[in-house]
Length: 336
Image 1 (spheres, rainbow, N blue to C red):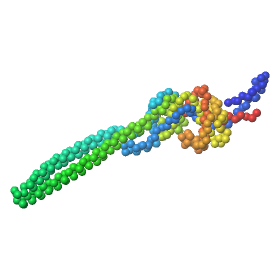
Image 2: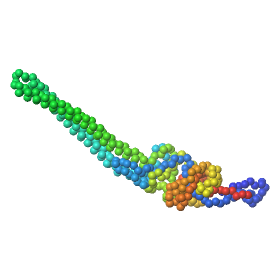
Image 3: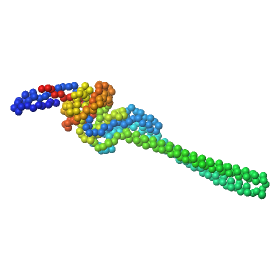
Image 4: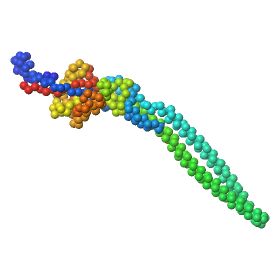
């Protein structure tokens, strides 16, 4: 980029050309194109526990990815990742049916036993009353026979109290069994709810209206695409609120003193070396390793630390889109 100075009104082209300030070449550093006003969307977590099984995959495969540059509405599906836990759905559904059937079967058995105990209690009451009436036969039977009636009455009363205690204990058992069965059924139902929660994590929906911009793949140095496998938390999509683009500039620590907010930069397309002038509007004041910024520890300059700057791009940048890598250099004006 050339910066033109002022020339005299009657001067020739040559003197005017001499008055121009020439940029001094500097080593280029790296950057990437991003959507200026956007929401970044990452790949879903891959660690979870479902139906007693622990899933801890290092990556998840993209099975659906909406087209780069497509306009979407809020809640439209942007991407879908492979959900490894989907094989648990038949087991969860089977377990729910099993638990409910067991609960119903147990309840029927307990009610049947209670019914038998209540019948025994009724019979015991009749036996006790009959034995009591026999004890009233004093004077009409022998003392020995009367003593036997009294013993039978005492035994009948004891059996009645025993049956009453069994009924109370059985009703406590029914209550406890109902609680246990309810918890078992609820646990089975919760696994289905968890399944639905985890499944939704792997289907990414648009948080707002916008334009889809595919992000850069962490290590392939290209945009992500359908079929890629990504670790949890990897960049996938930027959902732009408009079509405005910016460049994220990775400013080497050695140039941090010069490359500040307001600095003039030149952005070069990696594909054809076209260039565009930009001005830095933001610098994040905490340096990071380039390997971290690129999510690529095999990057040639992975250990080099850099600051991140942001510069809006002009409108006429045909051929550049979010996710593209670019080269950047600081424009220094030569002293006249």
